[in-house]
Amino acid sequence: MKKLVAMAALMAIMGFCFAQDQYIYEEMGYTSLFNGEDLSGWTVPEGDNGHWSVIDGVIDYDAQSEAKESKDLWSEKEYHNFVLHIEWRFKGYGDHLFPLPTILPDGSYMKDAEGKIVEPLGSNSDSGILLKGVGQSNLWCWSVGSGELWSIRNNQELAPEVRAAAVPLENMDKPVGQWNAFDIMVQGERITIVNNGVVVIHDASYPGLDVSGRIGLQHHGGVNPETGKLRGGSSLVQFRNIWIQEL
Image 1: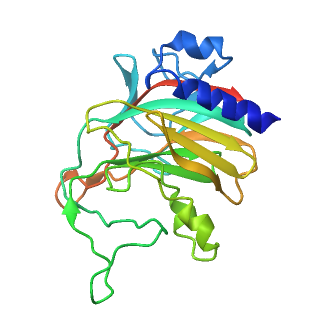
Image 2 (image 1 turned 45 degrees about the horizontal axis):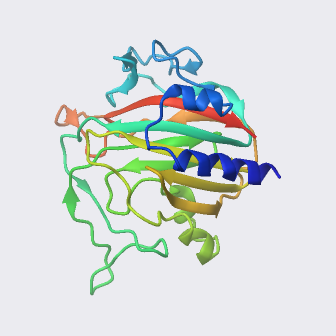
């Protein structure tokens, strides 16, 4: 029954435009995780020194956290089963180019005639939505699109169909600089992700996800000490309009 309720909530969201007014989520019983003014309700990495911040009503990150340990931003509260709405966009790219392999529908990488992974260099920004300290849904500029479940797709011990289900069905990302809307449903060890109104991950199995834990916004990349510039794939990212409905 709870899964049916969650799916109904996702379908309701998909029936509206992609980026929603806050009142829609309030009416649907969601709780806000971001007040648009400060990082109340979030745990800023110790020693971050202001790199996770709020600018013009959005959570802003420049990929340069000075924290010595984890540089990710985590919710204070833990969650188990839920539907999460979050809007995100990349502000730009890292200064260096980044290898961008093509992920095939079965989760493997495209290879050349010699069996080597084809990794053309390109501009990239990279972040992710961290799920309960166990899961990760990627936000990036790879051709496969955002929503990919990295640790599942790359786990060779899992069944082929499980790895394949961790690959986005379609690239629904908007160009860098434009806002995207994610809706993530977590129910037990199953996960469904809607990107800009289209299901990109459908009821995928995520072993180990049936726990309680915090929601995280991922740091990636940072400054290359040799060049003083941002690595390719750095998290030049912003977030807004974050809502959660516990199931």
